[in-house]
Length: 468
Image 1 (spheres, rainbow, N blue to C red):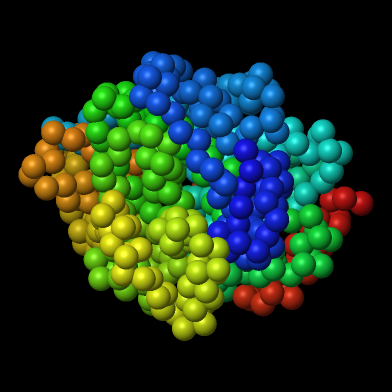
Image 2 (image 1 turned 45 degrees about the vertical axis):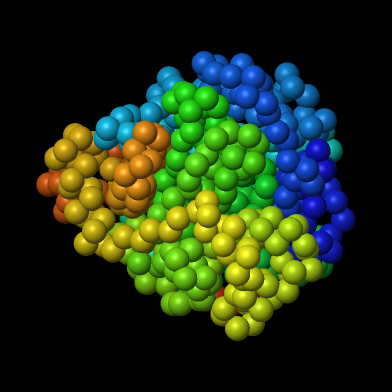
């Protein structure tokens, strides 16, 4: 399996190279050179497998020869052995045709755990064989940071620095990051929003001498390995509801487009996914694009669903590249224009192709509270604000589509957002026992300005201190 950049100017890499590189040197994102595809019979043969085994078989298609199948099976068994539900990613029926795919039973109570618990082990495996050390830098709008830290804490060959926007995550999200006091972990609260943090990470990767000196690697969904490790849970849920002999739809709350991209990838691999609903909050760039071909930046507004408080959806570039006929030059030009002008020129034919599959939806804070309350009253289901956007969006399916089950990605445990859930239902969801003392734990983080030189100095100092 080889990977190419969406902008066409970086040399192709194998999976190991993509895992360690994260972002391509030309600023693009890596995608498979050719998509693996399974026949209906091959998909049927995967039905009923335990989640770790299914994950190992599907991820192997993207790993190729970089990791032996036996090693990958072991890593998947270890990654998911500590999840809080025996099914790893169970489903709950919350309506006549609507199912919540619960992705929050991992150690940090968010869907990012499903990918990052495996990613940490892949890093360890590759680095041990190569005798190398890396520095991971990541930006988080709330959940990626804690999941990445949990996956990488105390690993001998990894230093990790996570940037989060100051005062723009929930308290639980912040504390899950800042109370990890491992020597190889550093947290930085950046004076800005998530997109500021994301831009700083991309600038560090674009700084070639710094990238080389620090041996930078990424855990954000700019790293293809993250997407590869998210693909199995969409396949798992679709197979459980009858695919490939029955079509399904997915409704995915998303800001950075990575989670819904994994659902799109399952369709590219041969499962009958009829519709992909992209659920957003008031930061609605994806909704505006899908309804009006308006891909234009606007200031980020804080909301009750902070993980979706994003102005620029980085993973959109991967789908755009496909819609443009995998034309790297055209993709690069569109992304450059977007950065320069704040507006992305998407040709009408490419927009129409994307709009035929993706459907946008945005939900206000008031609508979010109303949906959390409705789910509790009507289905006895307690949802976090992000999941509520997904369940509200699921109603988009037209009456003639009522026979198609809609799988909603339930992306976070309600206890990560107790204030919003309590406002909507009168109930304050408790943290699981393993996190019961979170509010009493010591925090450690630095508040720094959104200045590249300052952030790079902090990352360098952290990595050099640990390497000494």
